[in-house]
Amino acid sequence: MRICLRRARKLVISCSERIRETDLLEMNLRNLKSDSRDAIVDVLARAFHDYPAMQYFLKVAGKEYDYHLHILNGYYTDDCLQRGWPVIGIHEANEISAVALVSPPLESLPEPLPHLASKVRAVLGESAWNRVNEFDRLSHLALPSEPHHFIGMLAVHPDHQGSGLGTRLVEHMKEMSVSEQSRGVTLTTETERNVEYYTRLGFEILGETEFCELTSWSMRWENNNFQNRSAE
Image 1 (cartoon, helix red, strand yellow):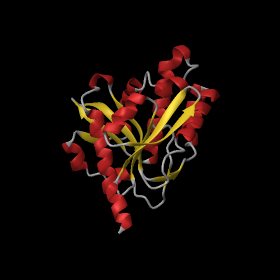
Image 2 (cartoon, rainbow, N blue to C red):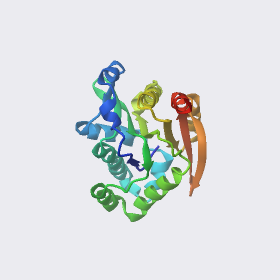
Image 3 (cartoon, rainbow, N blue to C red):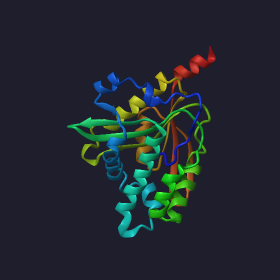
Image 4 (cartoon, helix red, strand yellow):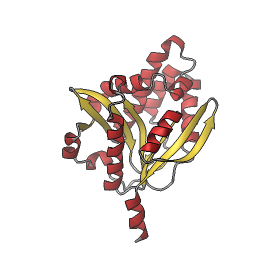
């Protein structure tokens, strides 16, 4: 899970502009836009409702937890959409059943978009906002400096979990890395179950970060084609 997005290199062409729409259609995948914003947020909020990181960020929300959860996931979604970065969804029966927020090869953590940050901070409170940003900074320390694609958030609606949709999204991210000539695909996760899942999909652990009551694992799937080109 990625919390904050990072600054793209100036010369990198937006991945969303280069993904072949015909390929996506064949897999029931879509490049989602702002008109799908509410549906994206709903899938994220449902999938991450009991996620350790979300519970940590919003631990003082009390009865407002569900509302704050939607606000925070709306922030992640808006940040990705407004930066023009890929938001890939899987449609089943004309509904979004799974979604991934992705960033292209980047150099460093960016400053949050001010107009979005001020809104979410006003709702969540300063302490929750600080937990989000500090955790994001620390959990990304083990990620490689080489150009890579980053899966910020990957969520499958609870009604569709266990049906292979998450794996389909991950495999598509691998293909994106190869076609975009990046070093690979990275992510962070905060559950051992997810570590086992991504390991089965070919990811390796790069580092482990302890932060208060949370443990975050940084993981990478390496694009060996990139390595071979660099060696030539």
